[in-house]
Length: 212
Image (cartoon, rainbow, N blue to C red; front, side, top):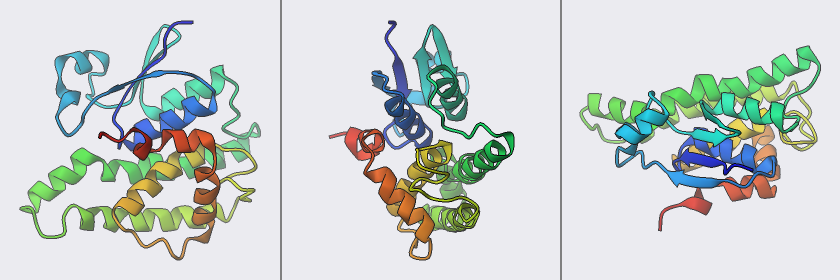
């Protein structure tokens, strides 16, 4: 089998999602760090992999894939992971739950966005933390409300980890990093506990790959 290579950054939410998916699929891979703070994403070698200058990039099955949700969808379809319900209606609702974080919340909390907002503020006191908390808490409150339409047994949409869990846990890492108040989000907190106890999630956690 051709070696699987993941170009990622330890604190990247999108990379975190893909690491969880690879672990859930039971796939061994080689991680290659692309240091976003050092600007490695703008280097010629990385732009050749992904002209967007983003992580993750996954090399698998003779393909070079970008965009975390597209990568996860490929893994789900080719490795029969069952990350989404089969019923079209249930599937659409589960996808919407995941996208409320991956498409609506995550982009405004992206490192480059937060850095630019901080620069525009003139490095105002409290930035970028104030920026992060301004968006993360309302986004997670909406996710908490959306979760009421699903039974957490114990994951977001059922008895097995699904796409929404893969999107939620990286955002919870960010929420805790920026000291977001989560005390009134019991559904999210119960899912977080279940995911934290799962080996695939634990092995993908940024702290497991943090620079020394």
